[in-house]
Length: 421
Ligand code: BGC
Image (cartoon, rainbow, N blue to C red; front, side):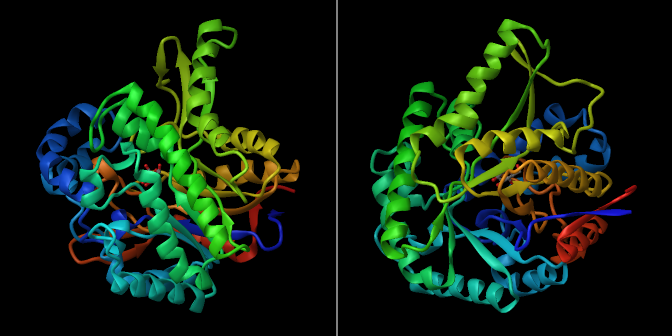
């Protein structure tokens, strides 16, 4: 056995997002779910019938209630218990998001009880020696803002700045790391390019506009946070894809990759250049292009959602990010694996590649597995299980998975044990 050491002070933890874990939120998604649950349940077989454990997962995926976030993990009430688990697993950092619809349920009216709740959440983390990374917007919108056009509204950056100033003004003494926006490109793709997520408005023109609106929102939030706390560290949670042409020398496959790479990995960073204290990587997808579409090769390992598992992709991404010369945190990386038979290898193999990037000089400073808990996976509902910790939604029991214990050893030792010298 030998040990691969990570840099001193490396942050180890997991991430969550308000709508996916808290329970009882009222926002654009919670309303959309009610209207779409039956349809999503009916479509499940055609979307996921090919996956390995489909027959076991199918009853849940075909139940319309699976698509209603409802009580979720009741993390809103159980955060202390959940953070006890994170601490017992030797996490020293945790990423979570603040639910805008709780803070500003009515336009311009801020709920101080909601702020007090998040102060309690932050205190609970600090009491356990866990460094918080706080996301201000993880996709959900208060209903009043949905009605004004949401992220497609020209006013969005101004509304976001007002909300940011309020939250950061109240919480800055407890937070050093802020992430204004989670994965702008996912929302642009989900809501406006493919038209599958609320508000399901498929339009390339709107998608293009939303890039600029969200970039402006990020820049205004960056400035606002630094106005309030010049020492704060601000970064964007960015979904980054790994790419591979089907035919190595195909002009058209390579062209597709250039185009897709530009709009997923690069464009938003370009639009917001100069307003990042750190960069992030959120890595889930390895895309193989055979002109004119993506292909899935039957012999590659996939997770419960059919997404290819390709650990080297994270290395490719980190090497690209290194060119920006900023510290990097991996703020999401994980998989849906209901029976926990791939997660341990997934974590080990991704960390091997991350370690290789660090050894080659890339300044990676932390890793947050997605997710601490099983949770509500947006338009797929509860059946995909991403958690280090399983959740029994009948009684909210938490079940620590064996992969979580494996990850805990890494967090404790700040090192990965590998076979051989
Ligand atoms: C999102 C999470 C989501 C995860 C898995 C990320 O893109 O930030 O909210 O649950 O992917 O799909």
